[in-house]
Amino acid sequence: DAKTTQPNSMESNEEEPVHLPCNHSTISGTDYIHWYRQLPSQGPEYVIHGLTSNVNNRMASLAIAEDRKSSTLILHRATLRDAAVYYCILRTYSGAGSYQLTFGKGTKLSVIP
Amino acid sequence: DSGVTQTPKHLITATGQRVTLRCSPRSGDLSVYWYQQSLDQGLQFLIQYYNGEERAKGNILERFSAQQFPDLHSELNLSSLELGDSALYFCASSSHRQGMDTQYFGPGTRLTVL
Image 1: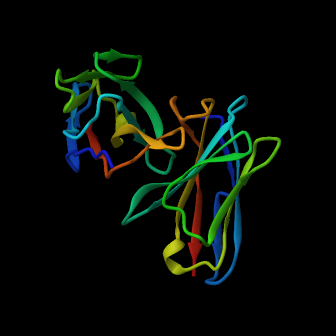
Image 2: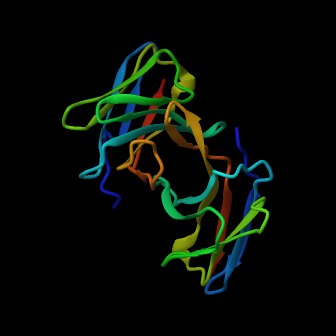
Image 3: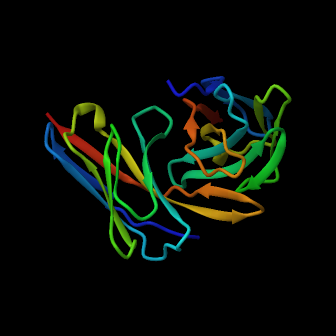
């Protein structure tokens, strides 16, 4: 199984940028990097995904290393609502024509007012 | 609001019993996924259905089964329940058959087995 490594927890001050790192040294050429987050008492929520190039959307930016063995999720201005567990996931082909998301433990982000 | 609904929100039952969890996907989504989230195992993929047919299986126990109906809602059946089955069960949906796109998660069903 393709695996990712993330810090267990991180802290950020409100209204400051946050960089959440992820290592995925066993990534293969066709694996997409997905980020989901899970707010307290809610289901996971899609944040962003990418393959090789850096990606931006209204929620965050994703910076992918040139060798693709690591990536960083960037929240440009953390708010209290961003306090959540952030999962870095490799979407891998599971065989039988289907792709799966394999969740790890994630990084618990705390935002300090 | 992701557009995915799950019922019930909470379920308390006893060991050995059988329960059914229900999921309605977002309008237009044909794929439904089931996940189990427990404190020690994290979020684990159980099974995927696409337009009524099973597409992929993850770490689903033989005591568990699922199906997707013609109206695309899905049910997860858990039988011979054990204490260790206590967990949050999430359903997600997507439009793509192969799971290549974003998954939208429901709010979950919290199952407590006493």
